[in-house]
Image (cartoon, rainbow, N blue to C red; front, side):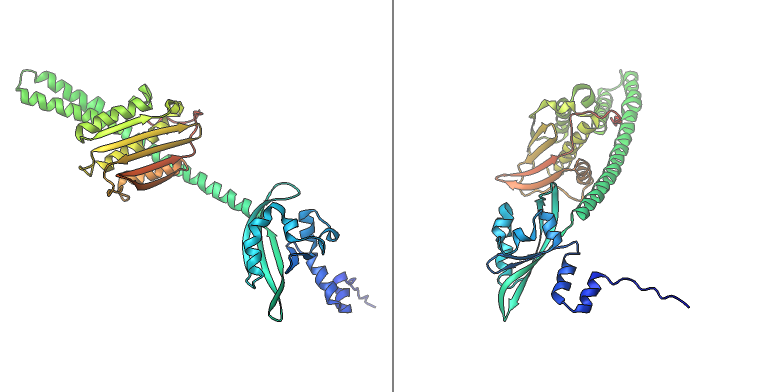
Length: 356
C-alpha cells in the first residue's frame, strides 16, 4: 500500500488556518528585506519591522511608542521635514537618501511615505525604505567601465591625430624645406624677387611645421612652446595676446598631457582667427597637482566659439579624455571660455608614448 507523505505545515500556514490576520501581517512584515515602519500624526513610532530594527541596531521595545521620528533620525531629521509635512497633508512622498549606517559604511536608501487616512483625516503614515547600495555600486562600476572605455578610444584618436601631424611636419621640415634651401642656394644670383619668395615659402613651411608638431614643447617646456606659437600666430593674425602660466610646475606633466593642453589653446586661437575684429585675447593656465584650469577670453562678447567646427570637436575630445568640463559665458565686455581638467597629475606615465 502506497504511503502518502505530507509536508509539515509552516508557521504561516498555521496562522492562515487560525485566521489571525494581525499575526499573519506581522509574520510577513518581519520576513521581507524592505524596512517598514509606522509613525502617527504626532510623529511617534507605532511599528517597525525586523529589517528596520536590524538596520538601525534597535529593538522593538526601544522604538515602538517610546520615540519620535525627530529623536530617532537625529541629524537627518531636518532633511526629512519637507517630506513629513507633505505626507501628513495626505500626499505620498518618495525620495532617495545617502546616509551612514549604524553598522558602519555609507548606504543609499530609497524611502517612500504613504499617508494613513481615517474618515478623510490623516492619522499617521507608513514608511517603506529599501537599501539600494548594491545597485548603486553596480551602476558606479558600469559607469567606470564605460568611462575607461571612452578614455581608451579618445586616447587612441588623439595619438593617431598627433602621429599624422608629426609625419606631415617631418616631411615639410626635413624634405621639402631642404629642397627649397638647395634651390635658394642655386638661385643665389637670380633676381631678388625669386629669392625673397623662396624665403617666404620656407618661413611658411616652418610655421606650418610648428603648428602641426610643436617640438619646442619637449625641448624648452610648455610655457615657452605656447609663447613661440603665439608669436607665430600673431604674424598672420595681428592681435594683442596676453599669455601667462600661473604655475610652472605644469612642465612636470607628461609630454602627452602638455601637448593636449597646447592643442586646446591652439584650436581656440584658430577658431578666433575666423573673426578678424577680435584683437585682444587673454590666456591663463593655472595648474595644481590634480587639476588644471584654463581661462581664455577675447574682446568680442557677441562671438561664441563655433561648436560645429573641427577645432572645437578636437577641444571637446581632449576635455572629455581628462574628465573635464567647459563653459562659455559673457563677463562684462569679454567672452570667456573656461576649461577645467580633473584627471591630470604631475606623476609622469612610464608607459606613455610620446606623440610629438
